[in-house]
Image 1 (cartoon, helix red, strand yellow):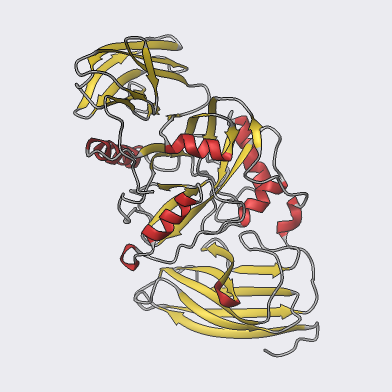
Image 2 (cartoon, rainbow, N blue to C red; image 1 turned 180 degrees about the vertical axis):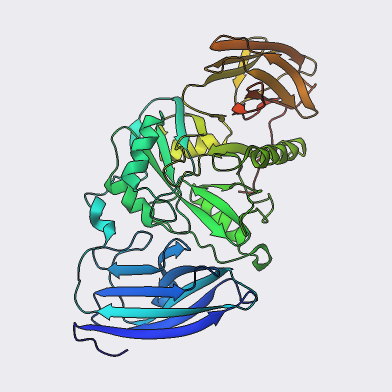
Length: 460
């Protein structure tokens, strides 16, 4: 690595990736002792394909990920490019990780320029939101039970989005949200970035979109700064152990957009280690979301008590943070309680904060709501009531293990009620959907369980 007159040492490496390369190609680079600033630039012809990009320090310590969103990163003690982790620069062999994503048949040439400087230099854009950090996942925003609205899936410039965290938080509050999950692709760098601009009226839940080449998983409710690895496929056997570790740590694991079209975005890891399915993704088309909803319904019929969730997957202006939103009955507005409520299925999905919903099953004075269990004797009468506000002219349907059991228009006004009667034993669960006359989804509930309690969706 030759010396530079300005005090930096530079190294240039070249290579080529092909369509038959492994998912991840590692390029070793040497960082000398005394380095205070490290910059890595990746160059290739983006008109021909996409190469994902990230960086690991010695001993395999994660230091950042860009995916295909940017081709340059800088790390220093006090600042770093969005998506990367600031901190000391240990001397030794670092690894630049390249991910051939869309590569032509003839391959794609790349060049890396690595610059290690002994001076701190100018701060990167990552310090634009600098300030005191938040108070972590133990924060309690409201110490009372209630229905709390959140978006489980958003992105900022800390992965492949176009907003700053502060801009996303402002949009979340405008959408009437009470909590927001930070879900950047393959990096924990967004946790601290969001905490720096934390609002007093919005709970932050730490997460990551674990973006593998065989599907994207939402890890929701992570310890602050917890990074989740993504360098495996189903055949590697890593996923069951990792998913179990995440649940043991209190996090929820969901399959994001299981039928997404882009390469590597469809879910291939099966359902044994999943708590939830993202059935409503604000960035997907209605046919793709309806397919995910049908998948979840089929899993319920097969006896798998997976939870239906929704998130906007918003990235940039033009996307809508808070569409859809997951509405959760939590004991407190705090990370642990929100995650526990989602895991238990005590949640329903809505197109916006204007939609209100109340879904109950009643038998001999006993009540059960969304995600709850109504026990009782076989053939005991059950009254079901669905109240919906903010959805004029919508049609409500009730669904059980054998399909649709009842449907009725809610009326032309802004609020309407559907009432129905059944008996315990006729179906083991009931869930509700609300749609506009053209089929556009307005709201969706998780099941009320009738009779025996459901078995857990994923192994503990």
